[in-house]
Image 1 (cartoon, rainbow, N blue to C red):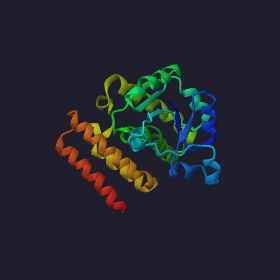
Image 2 (cartoon, rainbow, N blue to C red; image 1 turned 45 degrees about the vertical axis):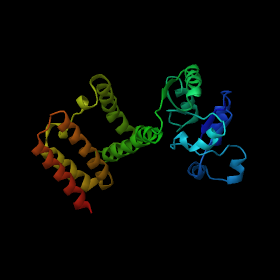
Image 3 (cartoon, rainbow, N blue to C red; image 1 turned 90 degrees about the horizontal axis):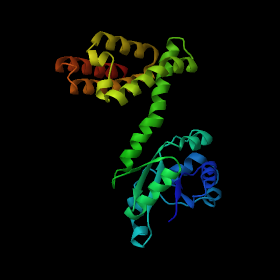
Length: 250
C-alpha cells in the first residue's frame, strides 16, 4: 500500500513526510496553478495522479491492473501548516476506495488521533463541496460580516470579537437542538420590516454583500417554512422582497 497526499504545496508535502507514512502525492493542474514556479521543478518532487475533489473512480485503470486504490483526506484547513498539523488530532479523515484498504486507512487515522469516516462510492465531490462551504465558504461569510461591521465602525478584530460568540452560540444550538430548530432571526419571525431595512442598508453601504445575504435568506425562509414557523403567504412576500432587491441592483 502507498499513501499519497493531495496537494502541490511543497511545504505541506515536507511536513507530511515527517509523519513517516507518506509515499507520494496526488495533484492536478489546478493545484499546480496555485503554487506558481516551474512546472518541471515542482513535478520532480511530487507524483502527478489526479484526485482532490474527484473521486477515486478516476483511478479505475490502475485498479484494473491490480493496484489497490485508496483516498485519505483529512478534514483540516491548511491556512497555516503548523496549525493544520496540530489540528489533525481529533479531526475527521474521509476514506474512499478499495474495501481491502478501508480498515487499514481507518487504523492509520485513529493512530494519528483522528476519526475515520468512510465515503460511499461516487460521493467525494459532494463531500468536498460541503468541506469548501465549511472552510472557504465560512471565511467568505466572515468577510461579509466584517464588511458590514465596518459600516458600524468596527475593524476586523472588533467584528470577530463581537460576532464570534454569536456564531459559536449558533453552532452550539445546532449541535444541541438540530439545524432547523437553531434558526433565529427575521426570516423565522416573518419580519418583513426588518428584512426591508437590511436590504436597504446593503444597497447603500455594502452592495457586494447583497447577493450572499439574499442567498442565505432564501435558505432560511425554506427552513422556517419546513419547521412550520412561517406562513406560506409571509414566506412568499419575503421571497418577493429578496428578488426585488437583486433586480434593483441589476
